[in-house]
Length: 244
Image (tube, rainbow, N blue to C red):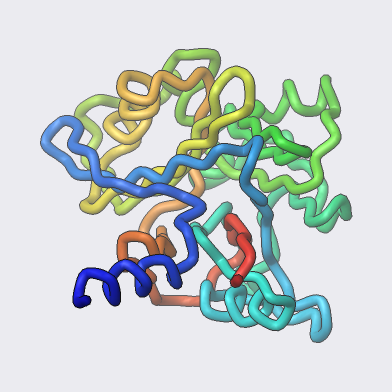
């Protein structure tokens, strides 16, 4: 009887929409969440539609979704932002542009060109280098610009240094050539850009990958019991599932 009760309890739990797992690379541990963009509902979140205030946390996104019978199956911070949590670069939410593309170089990691844009369309997600994005003008239902690019056409960003001592907890995203799979990765310890980018290039073998942020990098992955807290965030990327 005990096994029957356990089985019924498992059946009552919502199925995992996103599978996350740890992997080791160059003596470092990373957490990888793989999203099938053809089947999962991948969205970006920034502000509460009723109040206009920044959502800022996974908990607030979860509460917003819960009111509509949905739940957050996975989430991660998804781009750099100003003190008021507005996006530094291009941002599109549900087809509405909130912030324009910035193509010029500048200070900080965002301005370390080439940077790029994470673009989500129906059933497809792609990382696109910013100047290519401006040439092609793809239609994105959701988009978030960040930088630098980690991998460009299968090659590491040319300004990454293997022996760099600039290390942080880092997170980013890489997409397959067909746009059907997005790999979201966060390091468990501080790493430099060269190591972080090399994971996408050598292990995941994606043609394009984009850095989201460092130091404030956070992950929400209920499937592995993880919900990172901390300072309020700007753009958040997440997979939405039914709460039933």
